[in-house]
Amino acid sequence: MVAHPAFREIPRSLFPLTSAEAQAEYDALARLLFDAGRFTANAHRSLSSYAMQFDTITRAAASGKQVRGSWFAQLDKARKELGLDDLDRPIAAPQGARVNRYARTGFANRR
Image (cartoon, rainbow, N blue to C red; front, side, top):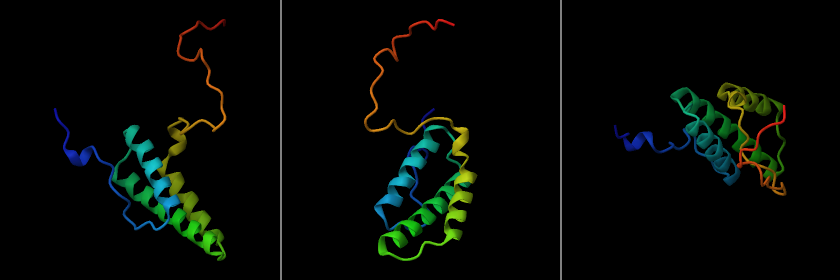
């Protein structure tokens, strides 16, 4: 079975994103959901709403305007609808984190 090309590509946001930070946030979370097999139409809508709120907050903060509390409430609501906590997988390690050289060797646990 060969998948249609539309099912291999992550669609762009439903709303136009003007900041690079918002586009990067959308791309990272979309890839996370897509790889987990949870990028549905509902998740796409929620992720687009989340990215739009993220973009609004980013632009307002960059231009020195007041950031409203309701924007954060909408951001949190959209993020909760995505269910990212259920994935239980970190996106990336901290920049200065040491690499565990024994992580992939399969040593037995002493318990």
